[in-house]
Image (cartoon, rainbow, N blue to C red; front, side, top):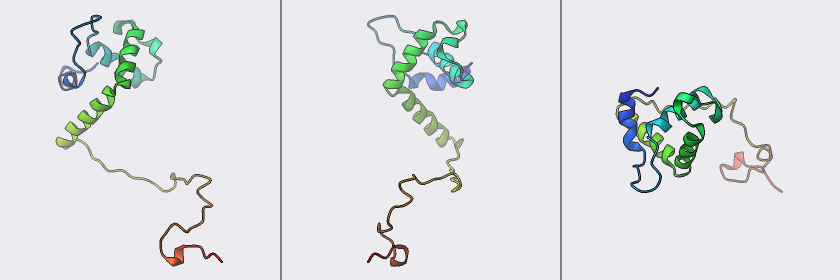
Length: 122
């Protein structure tokens, strides 16, 4: 479950409840089962009954996903963590796992660089 402190940070990042139309689902009742689902890797239909109707939760998740809400939440949380010094942005790429595409391996070397690095064409 999401702690009250974490929810206090997350809640303002989600869209406001509309005043018209169908009665809205509480934001926390969508975020908590979504976090549970991705933490466990379970299908949407296997959400525990304590979270409510899985289809309602999925529809809200999908709507927010298409609207870019989850991307904005991630950006905001990362920015806050970066400001607090809680994120280390070091990336290490090992050349043993970086591969060129099979069609890129045989391209001629006339794309720039010094003469020694280019193929000699006659």
